[in-house]
Length: 82
Image 1 (cartoon, rainbow, N blue to C red):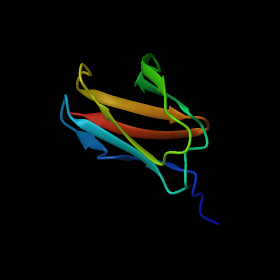
Image 2: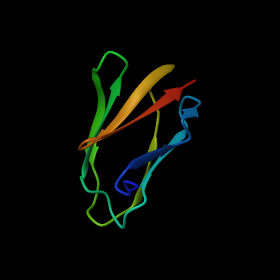
Image 3: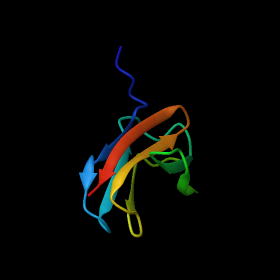
Image 4: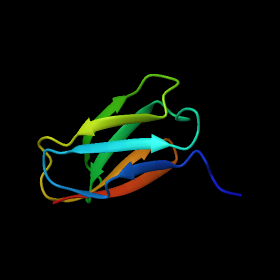
């Protein structure tokens, strides 16, 4: 059975200062809080979203080139800033 609550980020590789789109196949995200960490696990950014949405966008201003993770509840998705 497919997990429709999965968090999906796109694009998986984006230039500095561009927009990252986060969405879910469900009607809304199961968790309203998110955290972005770097490769070392350090928290780079955190926030929360409104209840009842299934997509939001984040501008990746100030992130250096590297690998990052977006974490929402039990879900994790990797992306790269180039």
